[in-house]
Image (cartoon, rainbow, N blue to C red; front, side):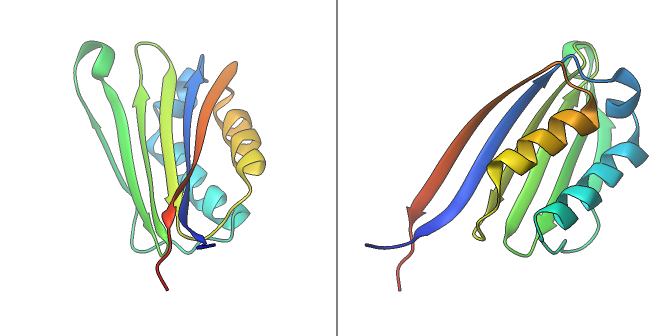
Length: 121
């Protein structure tokens, strides 16, 4: 049976700490700590840009990792975060969820986990 190509988690966080999701420095710190937690190597600098209007305004981050990427958007108006992590290297989903919810002080976290594709060897 072929091994999975990759592992993916999508996390929706509600009622996050407003100060943290509006801080470029805190968001960058999250990415650095997350990569250490799951033993992933960051590839280049994290891109963190604040843009949008109304309900769409907030930071967006993109961090390439040697095994794929971390992408997130933070919605200021509703104090929410939407974070996607995809990696060809296996990682601990529960550790990622617990760390993420705690880091952003989220009251709620909903997630979707997927095992992606078959590896062709």
